[in-house]
Image (cartoon, rainbow, N blue to C red):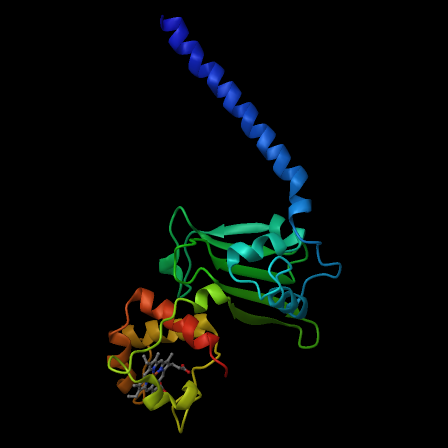
Length: 231
Ligand code: HEC
């Protein structure tokens, strides 16, 4: 009896391992076929932007990080690192089971990062760093994919009249900075800093009350919303 109950799980484990091995082999064999044709030229800012503008599966801009991943060139999908802690404004979106994901090319000239948790509000904000030969510097770009824009956070006029101070279309007026189309991580960082009192100055006092009313999810959502507006 005891022999039977011991040997069954062992047999089952071997069988399960066999199934897993077959699945992994199939994934490796089928992966290139599932992915779109890899970009022939090395990926850079322009080719990545072009890739995001047209999902061959839908004919529309790439909707989400999930839809983007299979379209990326193989080099980006094979070089990755997972970040479990950071000083980024989005650090609270990182959990042990869903770290932040960083993908990079073999030569490290193009780096792409996003929040790994698909249920986190910032998941569909993609940030890239690409090396620019002309300036010999890395250029930072943020892309707010349509799925992030659908969060639909729009400041309620009763809660905080952002446009009242930041101008029509949130493009800025007088000394008050424009917010439309700016980097979501920059905006989120400013809102955290204003909330925490880390941003000093006279002008920022009026923003204090506004920032105090935003919670974690609001900050991520408002950053996505602002970044999605036309500058
Ligand atoms: C009462 C006027 C007022 C309102 C209402 C207001 N802001 Fe501001 N905001 C300011 C001022 C003034 C600054 C610039 C502070 C400084 O110079 O340090 C600022 C700065 C900011 C910044 C930092 C921008 C930068 O360039 O660093 C962000 C982000 C921001 N506001 C977001 C918002 C959002 C989102 C709302 C609506 C929910 C909002 N603000 C509503 C007055 C306002």
